[in-house]
Image (cartoon, rainbow, N blue to C red):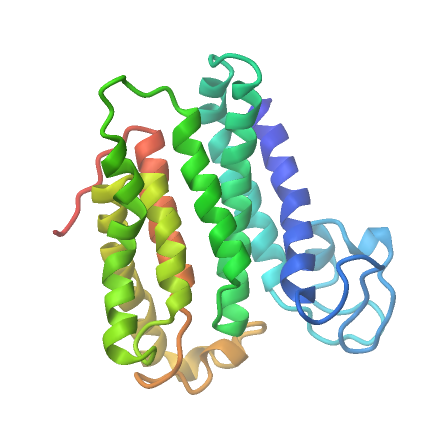
Length: 271
């Protein structure tokens, strides 16, 4: 039951994240949702997470224009990640009140920010500073809420963020921002504080492997997928010189390592 409740909450939050990602810097967050092509005001039955997109086959009810697959992907991703946190959240309720509630809310907020950052970076190849710093603060707080031994190496904890971010900051520095954006380094600060210095650094390094594994097949199969609805803009003309958002790979790697930690799974790392 807890998993179902968290999953449904994730669907709702994912729908809200879509609004934030698509409207940031373009229009106010408040106001009725409408078709981006014809301006048709969407009704409640057009806004049911995932269900409405599937029922309308990814098209506007009025003009028939394509509706980005980003909508169900963000909603489904948030729902799945929230559901995965459900068993972990039970640990929080063994902590003293109100730390137990803060523990759960902090974890859910971390997931929400990571999903939003990944979606926004994928669309605009930029990571908003406020979102990256907010994730970093939440990651820092998550460790403070976790019961730690008296002899815990606090200096190592404070340095975990800078240690994880150091490779990306170095790449940004030596390339003048051509190889790596500074936003990726800022995002990595939170990854270090969330995972710790060693695992955080491993997650950052693993993101390069993920990027290679995912991007190279896309480049090779570009012609076969350029006409897939919702992905055509993202992959058309994808080459080794293309500007590719790195944030989604960092976040995917971070989530893999984070949930492995939470569930006590040992990852078979290639390094």
